[in-house]
Image (cartoon, rainbow, N blue to C red):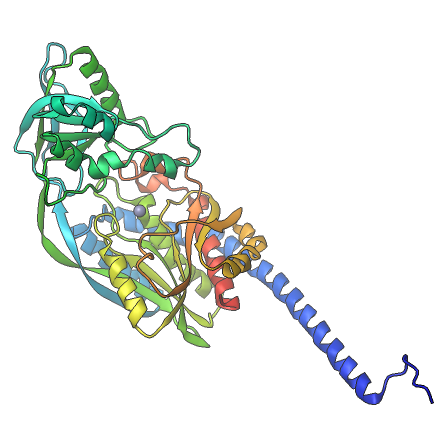
Length: 466
Ligand SMILES: [Zn+2]
């Protein structure tokens, strides 16, 4: 008899049934997990915004004061951080020893106009850049330039002068990090470039978007082959004043007084806590910020916020009673601002400890409203993370795209993917490295949304792997 193609054998029926069962099951579990992920993402956001727990911790931390690497305050903050982690009963709380530079600002920071028909005696708002040498009361005429090229073109005039680098951050750029990058070389290399042409000191226009008179500090470099000269930053109101004064009276003379000093390296620590994974404890998702700050302001945005957001990821898991299957780990990195020694030490550990780092996330761009995540990974991983955008959007994340991530996590060599948390940055450089970076500059909802955004990302990596 000819076989009817519409009649199935018993064997074929069983196979078809099993196949249908698998298809239905798969689509159900995918549907469920997608719904489940949405619900959990919403919970992270709701609990973060309602509890405001991280924000309160940030307030406590900021009360200690600044956290300049190697300072006594820094040690007090480390003790506070360890105790706070212990109070949350987190797993494997550790201090990881790091040798760090110690530079002390001193109590004299002055730039005074000492010879001028119009402005004699006027004091300018300045602050030493780190690790500037003390000034020994140097005095000389000021020479204003806007670039290293302009300085070279005027090299004959530069000898014996105090070089005033006065190029502003590009105000027309919507990306303030790029604008910062367009001006910061004056601070970083100004002392070396000025000394090469015979300059005796450096005044640098603060690299900031805020037109006030608070100097914005930061790191600068010396090289062994070039004589070291003192370097300060100047508030924008006084930078504009000085520029006008020099135009009006080109020969005016300044004196700089600084008594800052570099000491031998001292012992400090990264602070580490985690929730150990229940199924794959050797697979690590690490996240953090840098715990050191500059000694102007208290480093509320930079980067107390990033550290406390990282800690809050762990406590959000606790509050939602989620036991991660992979290890989720928070690191407060020491010494990002003037040495990166904490990041280097953790990277060494990560690559040799026999664990498998699958993701490293850094929050070091302030604590404003979430915008996106930058990622360094293979394309397939990037595509996978992009598919999570609907869940990340619950915390107002708008995009996921390739880009630079974070200094502290950069020394880790063996890691599947690196992430940078990117909040809005229009106001970040108003605060950055200055007396403006205080607790009241951080908005509770913006801060907490950042914690939630990263917690959702960590949750998804934990569930799905990379
Ligand atoms: Zn920072």
